[in-house]
Amino acid sequence: MTDVLDELTAARREVGTGPLPAGEGSTVVLRRRYDAEVEDVWDAVTTPERLSRWFLPVSGDLRVGGTYQLVGNAAGEILQCQPPRLLRVSWLYGEDAPRGTSEVEVRLAPSPLGGTEFELTHTAIVDEEFQTKYGPGATGVGWDLSLMGLALHLAGGGIEDPAEFEASEEAREFSRRSAEAWGRAHLAAGADPEQVAAAVEATTKFYVPEPA
Image (cartoon, rainbow, N blue to C red):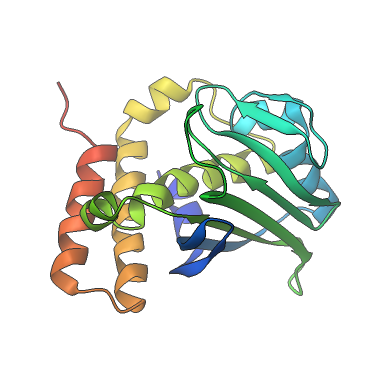
């Protein structure tokens, strides 16, 4: 479990707001260093074959102005692509999802310590009731899990059976601690402590349900 939990502590998290075509959205930001060259990290986050090994299978017209679909997950348009430093896409769930309400941006840069500085920003206009109940952890925990998968992939490993891993105590503890980490980021952004505590509890129950 130590290696997986170390990946959780490798990330720095921020909560805030940012502009979208449809208005101002809430942001979650993750920053961390990967012990791999920028070109390798870029290839891992933009090549369909490699994406399927640590994230999800993707299809579509993968060019600026084209569209993509992640299996069982988000779809959208490729808004910017500047290899090997910047990728920005719209990030929408369902055919009826309003355009301009959710975007993901990934930035890569060489790290002074060697390897790659990785930054992911997800900006979304979220239903106020949902945002109050779950807070930034609703999005953040999922990204923490994804970036852990990327770390394992870049190190030459991976999760052989995602369903088995998700049910493991290792993954459950990772999600618990991730929810708590997003609670701390939420507090640092000035949120009410009682609201944060309730949101962390709700997010934890969502990602770590009681065994049947």
